[in-house]
Each structure stands twice: as C-alpha cells, then as structure tokens.
Image (cartoon, rainbow, N blue to C red; front, top):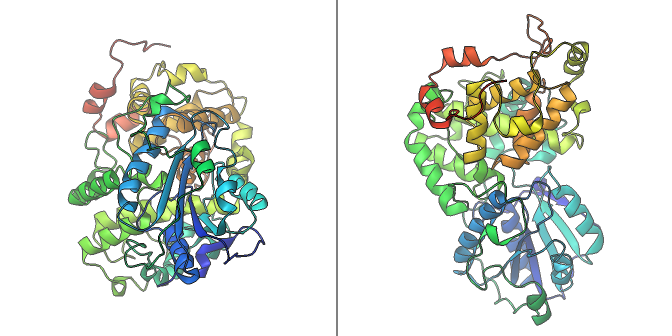
Length: 489
C-alpha cells in the first residue's frame, strides 16, 4: 500500500526534477529505518523515478535545550540506522555539527542534485520553522510527511478541548486508518539503482558523524550540566523496551499510577526522538492481543473502556498512546501558539487571573526548583528523578507540575518554570506530549473543579500528602529522597 495522500504536505511550489541524480530523504523527527511513512514515501519516489536514494540525518548544536542527554540519544539512533541502511543499496549520511553554524548549507548542497526532498512533518518545537526555511531555499519540491500518529493530522478538523471530545472523534473516524500502516521495512524488496558517492566537497565540509568511529555527546559544545543518563536511544533499544513492556502488560491497568511499581512503558523518549513508531507499537500490541478490526465496538460514546475490544490493560495503554498523545499533536498542528499562556482555555485563564494575587505559602526560584531544594520530600524526589533519569513517573509528573503552580509568583511564571525545567531535563521534552502535560497543569484539556481554592481557583488541585496516602511511595522516596540535602524552606 502506498503512503496515503492525507499524510503528505507540499511545502513549496518547486517542481520535481527527474533529470537530477537522486531522491533525498531528510529525516528530522522520524529518525528510524522502519515503520516510517517518510522513508516509505522517499522510496516510492525513487522507485518511480528510477533514481538512487540518499538519506540525510543531521543534528545541529544551537537548538533550544541542546544537551549531552539529547545529543547522545540522537547519536545512538544514528548508529542503529547506519547498521540497518548498510544492508541496502542506499546512501546514508549522518551528520553531527561540531560547532554552532557549521552544518549550515548542508541540506542545500545535497538538494542541488536532488529530484526532490522528502522530510518529516512534525508540528512542534523549531522543526516547522526549519522546514519552512528549507522549502524557500531549495530548488526542488519539498514534501513533508506525517508519520506522527495513527490518525492523519490533515484530517483533524480543529484542535479539541478535552480528551473525551477527541476520543469520541477517534471512535467515529479512526477505524479505516488502523489498516493503513506503513511498511515495516520500506527498503525491503525495493529495486533502487546504486547510489552515487557524495561530492568530495560535501564530504570534506560535512563529513559523516560515524566516519572516525562513534562520537560521544561529551565531544560537543552543548549543555554539559545536563549529562547523559543510563538510557540507550535508537530503534534497537526501543524495540527491546517495547518487548519488555508487552511482557508485563497485564500489570499496567492496576499498577500504572503506583510509583513503587513503575510499570510504565518507558517508550515516550523513543517516540519523541522518532526511534520507535506508534504504528509499530500498535501492531505489536494488536498481535499480542489477537486483535482484529472486527473487535471494535459499535458504540462511539467517548468512553475510555470497551471501544478497542482488547484487554483492560491494553485499552488503558492505548488511551495514553493514541488518545492523549495524538490530542497533543493535533493541538500543536492547529495552534501555532501551543506554547503560549494565551492558548489556555478561557475558563482557566479567568480563574487563574482571579487568584493571581492570592498569597503563596512559599515561593521558590527556578534554581531552587531545579536543584530540588523545596520543603516537600516527594516533590524533591520527582525532580531528582528528572535530573538523574530524564523522566518522572507519570503520576508524579502531574503532582510535580501542580506544585510548581502553587509555589510560583504567578501562573505565567509557573508556566515558564515548567517549560524550562521539563524541556531541559526530560528525555521526552520539546514534544507535543510534553506541552500537553505542562499545560494540563494549568487547565488545558481539563474542566473546572470544585471547590474553588486559593491560587488554583477551579484548576484541578493535587497535594503530595494525598498522593502519598493513595499510592505507595516508600521505595520511590528511598531511591530519590533527600539523602541529607537541603529539605527545609
């Protein structure tokens, strides 16, 4: 099956140039060789035009929140991709900028000899701007392909106010797309001419990142205060993580919110860096569940349980993977102001403004928050997990955000803290899903809750004491607790 036209965005009005040397696939967000509509679209063009395929994957240094942590994940993925692409008759060129600005011009140099360029459509961070700039500069057609979720972004009519509203929309419209999955390996069986060597001038100025061995993130001038963590990026490690999660899936429904159990999938960073596809996850889950489309419920009432026709654990996971994740992608796709305070729903802005001047029991600076120097041991533990592992347990991440709102001079300052702390330290930061979590703290995708409280107004309230009563946190506190560090106000 060919890539559906609903997945393809035309980024400029330049022509396809069949007389040129190759098709260029520019991997920006779907950084994987499998289950990838972007790569599949590039292969389709190359086969049709009878041209070789050149694959570019690059990373620069001066993107916001660039760190050793994020850089290492991308490099891990390049290593996996290089090994995979070496099995096929394609040219893969991974490039890691050694100094800010030195990668400038690489895409244009490769596009000069390209029939067309195929890249990723990603509705968040600085990637839409990069694609727009490239589209205006290159002399051939640029297509951006949506490989983000099970439902094509182009077919969503608008953003949605709640997960319930979006879930109901999906239940009415998703079924036909569940049988339109990308090819597991789009290069398998593709008849492509041998790729030409890249021009010597290009290789001298922009050599392959793997030419002299595997580089380390520590070799690059990025944020060294955010170090590499015990985490392996790349689609090989991502597949292992998926396999391990599916093996313990039966515990997910009952224990996913328990910090001490920690049965979460751990797939969010792999999804963010594009090393694992949501389609691959869905296909593996459906196979394990013995699922087929005939099991979908006829009811399309927006309820979380029962529509998929799978086990309770699988349905709970799919609600996170599909409903909540794609809700955030859809919002970013339709709302370029997704990172602005003004994008909050009117009711949330009104109640926060009403309580803007309420006295705060305590306020903390961003440095105090970043260093986990608050009076709250459970919050400190969550912040330490973020620093040490690049993630926070899913349930505690909600509490983490709510307390920052309570401890900040204003909701606007709280939002700044949330964005900076999350995007700097989280492996899955800088992502539509991250912005969903951050803004949910302030009311996005939620509703008004009573009783009305100081500071929060009718924004949903959470307390560390209640969380500790509701869930077992003893092992979590032992692992990430204060350990003698400052714990007072």
